[in-house]
Image 1 (cartoon, rainbow, N blue to C red):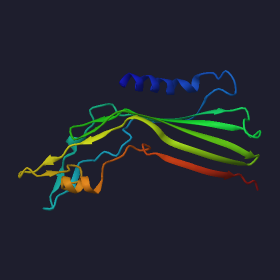
Image 2 (cartoon, rainbow, N blue to C red; image 1 turned 180 degrees about the horizontal axis):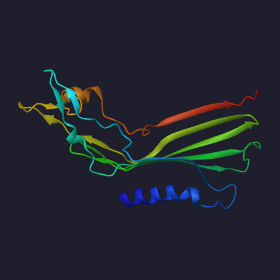
Image 3 (cartoon, rainbow, N blue to C red; image 1 turned 90 degrees about the vertical axis):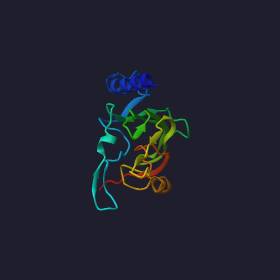
Image 4 (cartoon, rainbow, N blue to C red; image 1 turned 60 degrees about the vertical axis):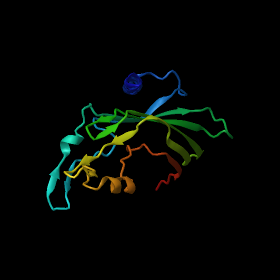
Length: 189
């Protein structure tokens, strides 16, 4: 799994330098990369019910090198429907995962699919689904215990049963199925 992510990451870095064989080849449209995990990890600072400030941040320190990357590849088809050009989109997301004592996230690879249809010289219709296919990305958290062996969430101070019931599990940014439909009309003044 880790090799798959390494190879894909190298491909994403090399794609902008590759020469396109023709105008209909896949081209890199956008690329974003950061040296952090894509999810929202708890900081580990909270105010207890007794009014005391607690620092459990050591339980949430990442033991991996964090990185995330998003890219969109595009390929224009040769006017298949009614002589209107269609540009196919392939959004790709990659996250290196997270490994801490109380928070673990598996590495994530996700792919989407989209299309842009040019309806006239100054209007477009786009349809795109992000993260349609996902591999990895599972998140696991463990509770802390107080002196009475009651479980609580170290990142927020909530009782563990309340934390689970509220559904505060962090989702990786961009790791949600999302369907986008846009109509774009360009105006010139």
